[in-house]
Length: 473
Image (cartoon, rainbow, N blue to C red; front, side, top):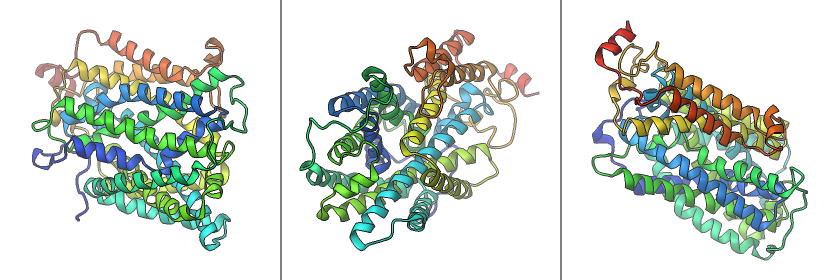
């Protein structure tokens, strides 16, 4: 299979051969991994029991999918990735906001997947063959996982799609076996051995809904276009693509997350997940667990790394996608080592997802408003102006930026960060919300409202030819 040469340029119609089933397969197969499973552990680590954990995860996921899934339709129309597509609303240079947000999201989730997958691999190999569990063993396993992930990401979309289709079947079987493996230790009355993280039930439940539930779909706000740009709008309707996205996200996220909650309670893993998961595993499940940790991590991290390569390629047009992917692979691996040797898992995960949700949500809301306003009609050639290092076009706006859209995002993100509550940082606006984290609601509402008010009754990009020429001069 040849290495994919296409970066964030427009995908020709002849190459847009994927369909809704492929979209479901890639969203399902790539998410059935420990990097997503571990989010089901978060509610338990916060001190929530079974039903509180389940309801918070399900509620957060469904809300997140409702906001995120329509973004898949943007790249269906533009035939390029979402950050580049957002140039229709932020400007062909302003779309760098989306590229940076996407790069940070993918970087964090790639590191997290390799981190938890590597920890489970080391623990499993220690029980199977007596592998030492010190720093050297972790370093070698992390490096091997990162190398395999980089190879898959460099080869690109077609290989990742085939891998996801295989993982959708293999990981479903392995998770089903896992339910049997841990069933003997599970009881619905199990109570985690940690107190409520925020001191009382409802604030902790809301934190779980955002950090464990909503964060899953939000991780895809810039990724969905990586897949739907290969789907032809001439052969597949917007409705079928939207339905496939919703199905893939809901099933692909809830199945592994709820498995994580189940196993965390069964293994009494309130304070840690990887160690108790391996320790509580019966001997017959160790090999399936090792396969799940290895293959699932490569599949999920591979897609995230692929997206990172596209975002870096969008930021640095002179870089090829393959070279950009190798660079971000090295950076992600460094974050894995930093996470293992210098951070507490729960604090690092919670802080990361809450902060990025706060800055990513207003970008997603503004992009959706712009998409609705323009009726899904775009000028694909004008979106590529920055990539070709040229000027002008209907999305040039002011020196390549849409100032009001960018300002709306920046104000929304800033207010979101000021209202966030994490184990490492608490925003000054928490006093006004009773200590409850409303960061994503506030950031999305403020950013979207400002954008709608500042750009009334005019779809971004509906600039006349004389205006476009004048702006380019």
